[in-house]
Amino acid sequence: MNSDNSEFVAVYGRRRVGKTYLIRETFNYKFTFQHTGMANTTSKKQLTGFRDSLIEQGATKVPKLSNWLEAFSELKRFLNNSADKKKLVFIDELPWLDTPKSDFLSALEYFWNGWATARKDIVLIVCGSATSWIVEKIINNHGGLHNRLTKRIKLSPFTLKECEEFANSKSLALNRAQIIEAYMVIGGIPYYWNYIKKGLSIAQNIDGLFFKEDGELHDEFDMLYASLFKNPEGYIKIVTALGEKKAGMTRNEIITAAKLTDNGALTRMLNELEWCGFIRRYNCIGKAVKEAVFQLIDNYTLFYFQFIAMNKQNDEHFWSISLNSPTYHTWSGLAYERICLQHIQSIKNALGISSVLTNVYSWRQKADEQKGLSGAQIDLLIDRNDQIVNLCEIKYSKAEYTITKEYESVLRQKVEAFRVGSGSKKAIHLTMITTYGLTDNPYAQTVQNCITMDDLFQS
Image 1 (tube, rainbow, N blue to C red):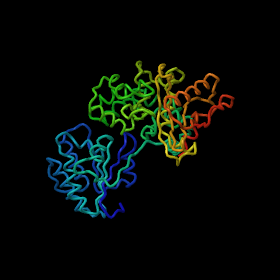
Image 2 (cartoon, one colour):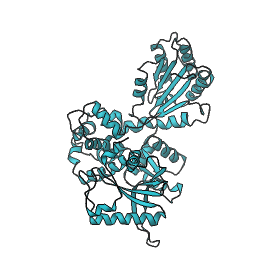
Image 3 (tube, rainbow, N blue to C red):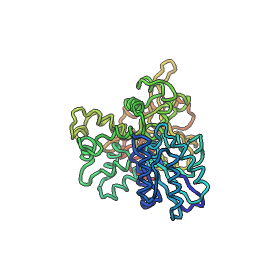
Image 4 (cartoon, one colour):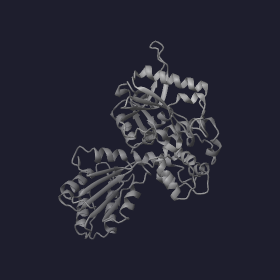
């Protein structure tokens, strides 16, 4: 707003992360013009809605709009008549305006390139939940909007620390273990956290939100993917396949499991799921880029497949009765691993290597007797520029974790499997990431570093 030039800002991030709220709060809900696109409707209805917004905000003698060039021409006329020193324009859910054959993007390009950039008083802010559209059509545009953005903000989910601050602001009286328990299910999505009710346990909240027929988030899965992707079926097939395999899958494994075709459409879907934060792509040390592994990391999606989709009896207390089940224990370990992957910077800070250049990997190796390789899966590797690799083992438990004689042997074998299989010449530091630390016994001496739940709450 204080710039000497016109500004074009894109705010993007997944559904429910708080993009609209952030923008409205920043400007105290005061805009020269604002409009929100409508989901799954025609170009004619979008234009009618745009005209209605102009009239509601003071525009006069606005004719019926037949195309987007006319719509932006009316917007220019309206802004020219505004007395605001800076003309603040906010268009929410921008991707929904780009209906087939509407030429919306061309009109937007003409509005910005042909008019707004010749002035110094326009601030155009656009956002939308369809992150892939924002990235592809606005940020990475190769046409008239190429390099036209002056600012971009990727709004990420809350960290554990931010969730703790949010919970405290609402007087929820949650300790860190309870915040972790909730984060496993809903991640750092502010919209979900806003539904956590004071006076109820986390289990009661989860049952009420997701398993009651009238729960606020009962149908969230279908709404989430439909809002992000125009044809969500292929995306859902990919995340469904990845939800079955903890360690992740290569592209070829996804093609087989999801029964998809190896083509450009698959590349686009994988890229878009990664942009939206649902999956991550990682390369194993010593492996080719084309052998990259894709892994499901969205907390809610993982929870959906493990529990909501499995609630065949529509039991309103399904979560509470699942808390001591083998499925729960398997899921909680996996969910805690995802939380750690989402808080790499906090782990680096706890290790005292925040300023050291690092690469983060996971690593897996199939057993190969002919080559003398034993099978191993390592959840997190921090490959450091100071000639050290932190080989991280992640364990979720309700108390201090005890390394037994048998498990200590497993850890040694993992270290050796990585040393041989990766060919790395760096020093290997075995690092345990737990909730409450390690029981002090002789076998714990194998571990060079121990990170706890509290470390994950540090910025």
